[in-house]
Length: 310
Image (cartoon, rainbow, N blue to C red; front, side, top):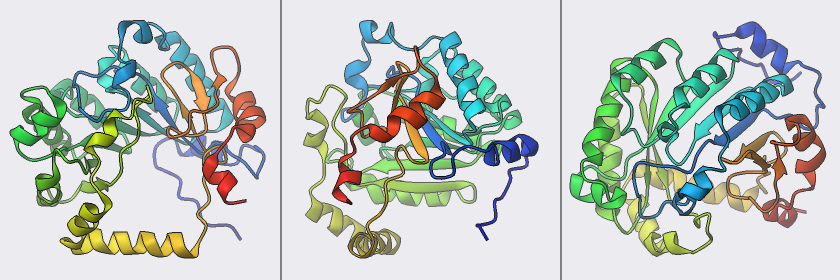
């Protein structure tokens, strides 16, 4: 007997149809991440999409009609969970149109945002068309640190206001802090702040940075050394337990990669990829269908992690 499947209250019939749609059992596009834009109103020093936030690149990003067409193909293929991210999603003037279209299509939606562009109108709309969660980057708890990372004065204040608007409407919030040389003194303070907000707010710690899309290596100058990460995690029982659990899993079990098996990534230009960390090969959804890309092309895309497990 398989594991019980909890059908969400919203669009329960549609979710049932998606789960039992008759797609091949060995592979199924359960969840995807869609990088809708590389644009952003901030200039975070370690940002990996910033090199592509240029007028020429922005002109190549999918337009609203193209996004809607691909959303329809994802729905038809049975995708259940969809994460909408950027850049900053609200840098797209049509983002709420896209969000509402995706919500009414029955996807379980997660939104990644920096929180600074969340308005009362947005929060009120989300209170009606509720996301599964909203994940917000919290780089620190002081303006000196937070605004130092974003390089935009006043960004911490606007971020905290966005968090408050969501909490007032009981929308689940995940606060994420990436460890940096720039915020090393406020990482645990960010965790304590998140915990002080009470029910409905959780906190995640990101230990490692990724290279930018231009492959410049620039973000790695802000990477904390492993010794410093360990010393930091030892200061907090929950973080240290998570670290030990991760080490135990990695030593005892070869963790399977879900990229291309049950998950996928779409970039701002409509290219289907295994995951956001692996853009070595792409399938163009502007000229082809999602089903063809996922079932016929994605399995053949290179994956160093998968190949290392063979």
